[in-house]
Image 1 (spheres, one colour):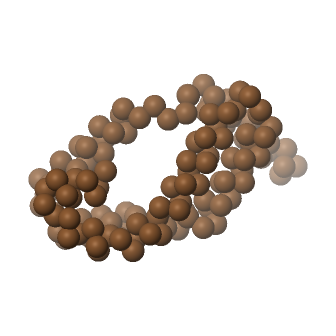
Image 2: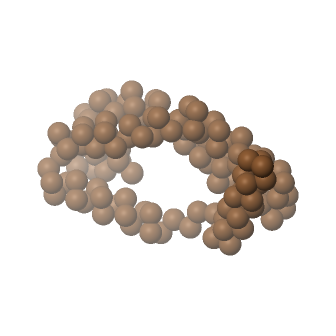
Length: 126
């Protein structure tokens, strides 16, 4: 969302400043995609799905959550330095529109899986 917008408004030079962060960030998105894909197969094999979500969740927490947490600081600070308030507002609107239109995994499968993960976590603790 960010890079195409920067190109659209003629600020593609910021991309080189973002490239280091992108190189660290991108592998983490693959783990998140694996989590979402696993959730989509929940109705077919619940036990295997939960195991995959836990496995990918550990990968995310161990290796990528620190990178994702830096997104707010590094990327937002960089954008605030180089973009006007109007340009930032437009980018925020584009991101909001995308988030509102994204379906993600089906809600019912997600809710059911969350309940079973919570149950498994409680059983594991005992």
